[in-house]
Length: 161
Image 1 (cartoon, rainbow, N blue to C red):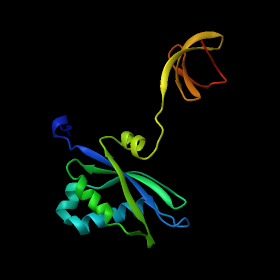
Image 2: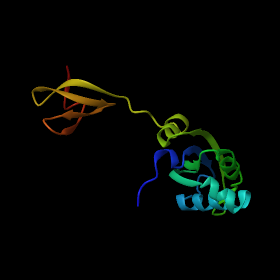
Image 3: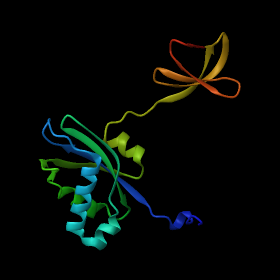
Image 4: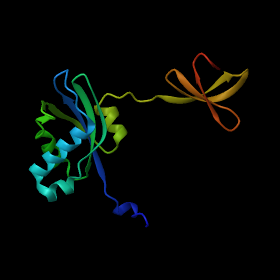
């Protein structure tokens, strides 16, 4: 089966969502996805829910707070936000749901709205194994280029030139 040409593929938007409930409650990805589908179906109906195609692509929840990234078809972000606003409880636990922002990629949604740090990387020359080599450095770790491969190293394993 052939793939669709790029101009015919569906376009997506990603909603960055924050969740909050009591500290002792446990909420799983499946439970959140199920409640999202029910809310979308109850508010938008079957055709509207199918048009929005609400899918949880990232989910993390600990100690009463969590965050998720929800995939929605482009042009259906307002109905998706309305469906998210209809979620009042998950597995019997009261929950607060807040949409932090909308983005065109998962990475941008995480970095801009959910507080994930961007990786600052840069290529530098380092001394590794008594030879000067090129390395890609990110924070306190680096990947040093050997002949045809990379070796992972920390800042204690190499010296900047």
